[in-house]
Length: 134
Image 1 (cartoon, helix red, strand yellow):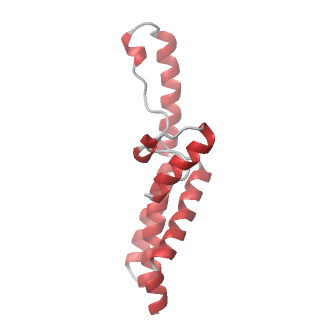
Image 2: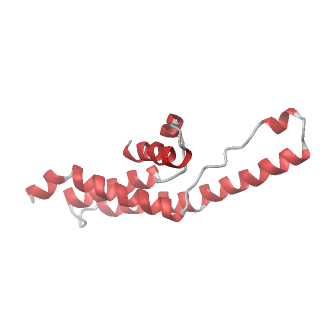
Image 3: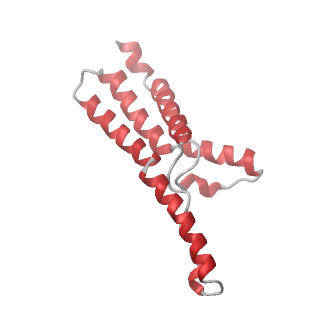
């Protein structure tokens, strides 16, 4: 929720208008997927320790999700952008040219990094009781 809310606020500063649809949208700064995954991994590390068998599972999951956000999903968005231009050029005036593929799917490395940092910070704040108990 924090990552998605941050998208709305950052978009307001760039576009000068509120767009609450971003609360349910993928892509953009910061990556909420990365934030969630790193918060999970950090929480497990803080509360159970990195020696616990759950930590490598969470870490592996986090790395796969972040790799996917930068790689596969980002490139799918780039391909959608090109396909939208091709359809618009070839089918002007045709009903198919009205349908657009979603272009903002993945994330840039900086968006993933920002999401990861946000996730670590949120996990550290939320897991204060685990840190105090040890």
